[in-house]
Image 1 (cartoon, rainbow, N blue to C red):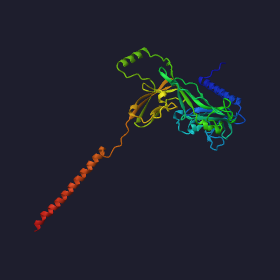
Image 2 (cartoon, helix red, strand yellow):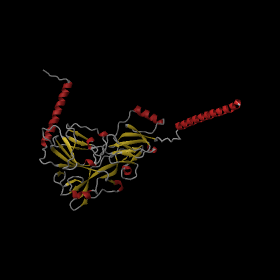
Image 3 (cartoon, one colour):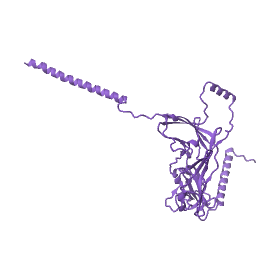
Length: 414
């Protein structure tokens, strides 16, 4: 006899099998990764405004949910609990502000801790454990600031910093791979981020590094006597020009192309890319910060104002201390003290593709009305003046009439 299952029932069975397979695989992964008998801390370094993820590599089999803890310094009594004790905290990264506390910028996903838009104050120890305070795994996170970042423009013949060798340590910069070209079809730019690292045989043995005797400059494994010279060296970013072709898109149909040609011949405005457009209305003198939708700090992001390319070689933050319009290291476009001339359309590129447009209009600030320039004030003053004038005239007429009546009545009595 042939057994036939409905489509819905078959789909549910398939989902159950996949979930069981995923749970088994995850459980096997935790079984294979034995927790260390003595808690160690893995070193991890990031640039400020980046988003990072810390996986909990091991836990006992009987533990179904984990709790994350944050300690700025080992031995400190101030411990921040980064969980709701159920592992279900979720954060929408598009609504995360750079200045908000870490309690508003984290999420727990499959036992891993995700911190959005990391700040320098997020540097410290992160521990994966249970609600009762039993720790399984630990991280030593170093978030390096962008305030002391050094910018190198390769096209101008500039070079990155050389290594600095001391008696007991050596300072150097570890660069990531070059990013993608931030524009296509026109001249773009590539960015390469470099973080500060230190090599020494006197690092704290409780901190584990990928390369022996090498850790990031802000790591707690660095002895206190080394930290003063470390302040002279910060992260770096290198920028160079690039040119890459745009991917071939599907050509429009013949009828659509003919209609567009007719519209263009009738004097239609200049061509504008078909991307989602946001509308912003700002008052003159205010400030505005534009963020490219879906972009992360490590992405290749570019900004244009109409047909003008806002290249980092001129508009990157720190290139000129008096810049009113600039791009920060988190790929945001800043407009300070907005002027009437700033109105127009701003375009955003992400990973070499044009993805969004921002239509900016400027409104004149409401001028504070003076007392004697206000038409209502002038009308009220005139009305009050006329009223007082009429009352004065009536008062004088009454007194004149009384005086005249007394004068005329006097001879009659005689």
